[in-house]
Image 1: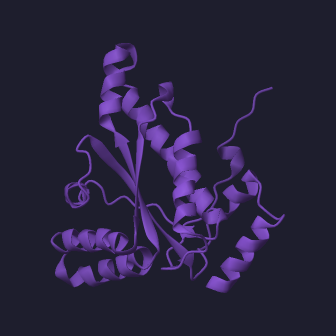
Image 2 (image 1 turned 90 degrees about the vertical axis):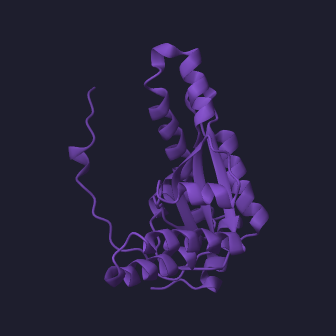
Length: 218
């Protein structure tokens, strides 16, 4: 079953009027959506609010607050995926590029916007100097911080009626993206999250048995 824009608006209205999901429900509904439209059930200011909430309340090791977010909307969103296609066109065999282009155009560029997730290596390096005992761990903990921001924003976007997915075209697009938007060279690109109103449902998700992954000792 496809969800059109009116259905998303209706569901969003219900969420805002006494039927909002709790955290467990929101997490269960977070999925990877690869069929997106360039529509939004909320204002751009509300999207910014989601990112601000994550940056304010998601924890980080040593309160490092190392995550940096870049929100691309409108033509800037499209520009990101044009850059990605241009780079991949030089790398992917010509006979295979049409599938790559179709994937990017239909699953990512077709959406409403993209969130870029960065980690500020200047912050990480500073912590390494201040706490040399944990020097080798700070880059790992920085990635943990980014991952928590990714999950939080992904879940909050979905709860507002968006579909999203998490992409990793870094490091091949890093330099071009940094130059296009004049970003700090100390920032390391971790992931890209295209989002938009979904036009199709996600596929089935295989789940490994819980008893192979959870172990309880009382």
